[in-house]
Length: 465
Ligand code: ATP
Ligand code: MN
Image (cartoon, rainbow, N blue to C red; front, side, top):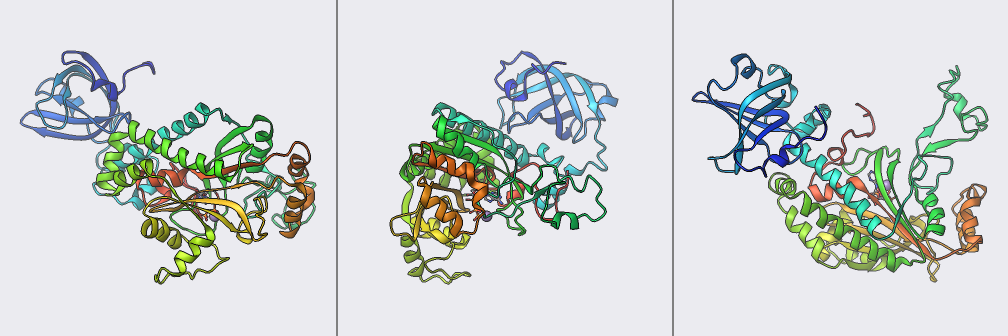
């Protein structure tokens, strides 16, 4: 057996009469008037291959083993299918069963299983229609992102997963330590001691909440770069949009202002979504039918319409005058909640909105200060149905202003010596953004819970698998 073999997706293009082998897992099996029909899937495409086994074509004791979940190879001939729904099917003359799946306890046979139940058997759920489609879309989206940046001259860089600087001063972080390993009897009291000399890195270290600061250092040399890697936040709230471990796409561009950043974000979303729609048609069709009825309509709309651009201050005015009774009140200076973001995109504008120029106090220290000294050159891309999908900014490139902001926000200035160096030697206007990969996947699949667009989710209380 070699990996260079045809997938089921290839078999649909074969001319009737061709002899082929089909490898996969049995999805369903149905017997009627001496003929057995097996729906076979190998995950290569949404459609299953229909395998027809005529009476007497295969030995009875092999036939018995063809139950949902069993892994098999069928050999036979591609024939025109008389049934509606497929052009060709496989008339089997050979079968090889690799692994049985006992029908009395195979967990994935229940029809109409809930998403919650499927999460408990996350190791098997990818064999079903919904999650097969999610993982294929996830793979294509990842490829489309690398393709988008590479074609535009962005260099893919890898930023550290372990960091000793809480770069944003924002996200709660996970500690990385070997004190536990060293078997200190007074762990975690040991951790509370201010001196981390005995710990692995000799100072407090954490899992990264963003690769941005390091990406900035490489952009100021390579001009346009991007990272696409795992990111960690100890968000102790169980929302449907937050994970403790998620994947983030972070482009960073030298010689670029906030306008360029917004243009990139808009083009990025349009091109990546169009690519997924083109290459995952049947999967998206399925999501549209079974998960989110407005999906294709809204995705086509995003691809073809210009994103609205509006300042935070304007947005607050619209929200205050909306007449809606929000759970969280809005006023200038407060951070927008998901309900506000959704109202702006879904009710007010009816398409994605890019909000800019947020109050400095609700944004990170590195965002470029506007002349009003109250707002910064930040931008968030808000999308109908899910709210914030991208957060970005033009970075503060002026050394004195940046220093002042670090101090004002109570951050340890010594830790930022290398970050400040960028402003001392050859500083340039630069900008970038962060996109939560799983938020994008929620958007393009219509899946309602972020736990269902990553194979194994890490959330408060859950690190199974
Ligand atoms: P939110 O307000 O939704 O928590 P944020 O303001 O904390 O987002 P940023 O720090 O700007 O987000 O991070 C950049 C992007 O990463 C966000 O736009 C979002 O797409 C994504 N993101 C942030 N936190 C999470 C998380 N816990 N799980 C999944 N994606 C996330
Ligand atoms: Mn957050």
